[in-house]
Image (cartoon, rainbow, N blue to C red):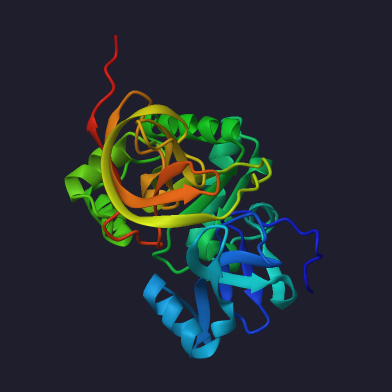
Length: 320
């Protein structure tokens, strides 16, 4: 069934086309009546194959170029699906409720249910929890991670606190060396492994449940703010102090900067969510972007892997 025109799309939702292509939503605002997204799975050889950035672009170029899209609002090349081409809208929150009301089909689903039960026992409102990634569409394997979405900032920070408490209580485990290395290899980020590890350990947005890695991601439920078109001015490398990191875990992550020319840094790459705290000095490599009003910001995550783009702390916040 096609979604109604008033259907609401949020980052981390999946949409499925009539051809069986499955895209991850990357922006909640429609553009030209299209959902901005990125191809994640395609039916190949009778089963769903997961796609990396280059593979997804090549696949669409060869088989479905109509989904390749140049966003004027974001000044970026990505994928976009007209609403009329959507056969099914996969919502992470619905998947959680399905799991809680069904018999698990495999060990990955059992672990997801166990973690949900732990969250609920600690007081987290499970109505604010969703599951995205392979588990959202039933494409999980025995080695799949669990990708949780927490809707609303207050619920997300509550979930982070719960993860920390459960690790201390021994009910969850911090990532071991192999799991950290695997997370690093999957990300393919521009930081060294040691730099990546230092930043990640303090985020409290991932852990292990019975040997399976999970992470939690914030999706703000407030409507996306309309923004005019922007233009990319080219790569930039700078150092600046973080003036405000209140929205560092959002999608996209936003860091207000103390800088004479730039107002903020924005990361569309999950690797750099929660990367820095207010008062810390960071080094940022990304693309300089200018809005129609002349305001400039630096953007990290011009592609899913964001090759060569990063945010890293070079001077920690001093505590009194």
